[in-house]
Image (cartoon, rainbow, N blue to C red; front, side):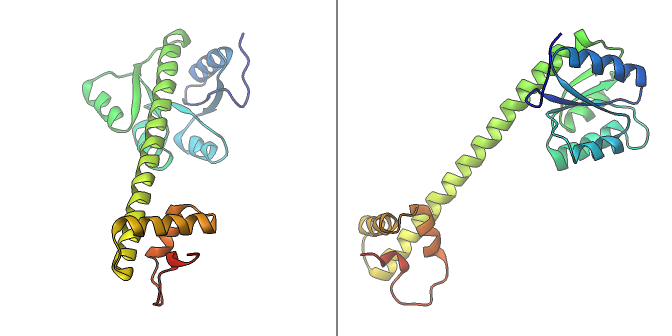
Length: 204
């Protein structure tokens, strides 16, 4: 028997069949996962507002909002990975699930031993996607900062009639003198100035 705590992966099982929800929930908990159960999409949405969730296991057929409709909400507003459970396996339904962000699509009936490998794979894939998004954000930020530095250097070149290297050195010296990041000084340079010598000339 495994134990789980707040650091364990937290799963949200959205299943209106009480027996199936209890069986899968108990089995997943026994393998160390935190499991939160909701019996409708509306109940799941309320739970998402108060609980950290790492993966959603979603029955396609739910009362009220359908599983596919709920999956679209999860993708658009929460960015959560999900596994679909369904009684149907036709290609159209599979395609609809994938379009809504499903990392896996399992046909019921299903037991915990069948579900576990898919849960592990989905959590690993979700972490890969999270890291890729983070890397992409870092890269975009770096590109934006380089663009801001380039623009600030251009401003100094134009206003002081100097070449690019002296302008860059002036920007770097100013950042060092003010104990600030060169990117932050560059951002200041891009703000509208009242006139006169650019702020990057300070501290010379």
